[in-house]
Amino acid sequence: MPFMHGSMPLRRTFFYLQQGKVKFRDNVHVFAMGFHRNPAEEQSGARDFVYWHWAQLQYHNPKVQLVKHVDKVITPFARAYLNDGREVLFDLDGMRREEIEKTLAKTLGKTELVERRERLESIAKLNPADFGSKNERQCMCEVQGQHPCTGLLKAPKCVTGKWRWNHNLI
Image 1 (cartoon, rainbow, N blue to C red):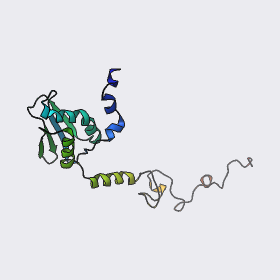
Image 2 (image 1 turned 90 degrees about the vertical axis):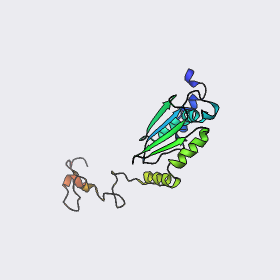
Image 3 (image 1 turned 90 degrees about the horizontal axis):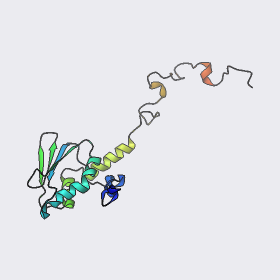
Image 4 (image 1 turned 180 degrees about the vertical axis):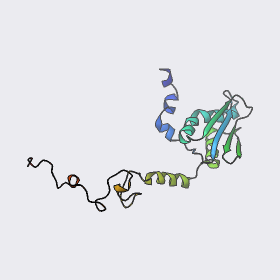
């Protein structure tokens, strides 16, 4: 199988996608990057960044449109379009892929505090199907179309468990 040679099998794993460090803020809507396929030595960082980190960017930022401009520019660049109309432009000439990753994470990425808060919120997110004093609904009777509480209305004898329709069983 030809796709099992080189670094491709590594980049196809779920574990590798989860290792991405760049998680864009909520106000980033479009991220565009221009680079060459056969760059000079000082411009190879942008191509390497796209090769190794583009799939991780797509995985961690599903609501962000990612655009590649391949062989259309003179110098490598990255441009982020924010939701308020502003643009953030990065000159990637002479930068290695690790430097590019750190720059994007520091400038456009979420802070450690925001990531921790979002992770805790997702853990503590209440399930709407749960009932009780710590949840949104106290009782099942608050749901539209369910039987009312027996504290409010007397339940039918067949529901109480004290009445049997067939007395010949026991």
